[in-house]
Image (cartoon, rainbow, N blue to C red):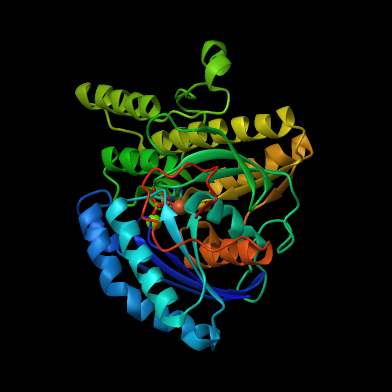
Length: 355
Ligand code: ATP
Ligand code: MG
Ligand code: FE
C-alpha cells in the first residue's frame, strides 16, 4: 500500500511516504532553531511551527515521492506519546486528509514508529548498521532521544510490543542538553558534547551509572535515571569553579558521555540476554552519538547480538517511520482508526494503534 505518514510529536514536522517497505519520501521541517534560545523545546512554539510547516512539508513529500494525493491508499499519523499541542496539529491534518481523500486513517504510537523505521528499504538508506529491510523478530529495541529513553521487547510490530523499562526522570538526550548547557555549550547539546568529548579522557571522572546498584536493579533492571548523573556533573564542575580551577571541559564531556553510553548498553544487552533475544535495534536522536554507536557495536559483538541501526535520518523523528508502521497495519489487515480519536500525550507503548 502507498501510505503517507505524519509525525508532529515534538519539534519535527515529518511527512513520509512509503510503498509497503519501500521508502519514497521523508520530508522534514524542524523548529529546533526557534527553541535554541530557550534551551529546550517550547510546546506552544512547536505547535505553531507545525501548523505553518504542515502543508509545505506534505507538498514536498509528494513531490519527492513523485505521487499525488489521489494515489494514496492510507494515511498514518502519530497520536502519542508526545507534546499534546504538537500532536494535535498532525492529528487534525491527518483527519482532514483522510476525510477529503476518503482513505483509511491509522492513528499510531510514536515509539513503535521508531521501530517501524527499521523495516524500510530503498535509496537514501545509506549509513545503516546491519541489514536493511527485513526486521527479524523478536528484537530488543532501545529508543533514546530528547523526549524518551525506552527499552522495548518487540515480538510483533503490529500486535505485541512490551515495555521493559524507561527513564524514571530525564531522557538521555535531555541529559546531554542539560550537561551541555552547564558546560557552556549551545543547544541542542548532544552534537556539541560529542565533538568536545572526542578530545577528552572518558576515564578521567567516574560519573554514576543510574539505577545500576544491586538494590536498584531488583526493581529497575531495565529502567534508566539520568537526573542524578546531571547533578553529579554539575557538582563536579561547581567544585572546580569554586576552587578557582579551570574546568577540563573535554574530560567532563567524555566522562559524561561514557557514563550515558555505558548504562544504556549495559541495560540493553542485559535485556537481550535475559530474554534470549540476540537482536538489538537502536533508534532516536541520541543514536547519533559516536560513543553510543561504538560501544553498541562492541557490546553487541561480545554478546553475540546482531545490532541494527537505521540511518540517522530515520532515527530522529520523521514521518517515514509512521508511514512504515501504517503500511504494516494495512498489510496485517488491521481495521483503520475511527475519526474520534484524539492526541494522547502519554499513550502507552503497548497501544500500537489507537482505534
Ligand atoms: P522525541 O523525543 O519525541 O523523539 P526529540 O526531538 O527530542 O523528540 P530527536 O530529534 O530524535 O528527539 O533527538 C534530539 C535529541 O538527540 C537531543 O536531545 C540531542 O541533544 C540529542 N542528540 C543529537 N545528536 C546527539 C549526539 N551526537 N550525541 C548525543 N545526543 C545527541
Ligand atoms: Mg527533535
Ligand atoms: Fe521520537
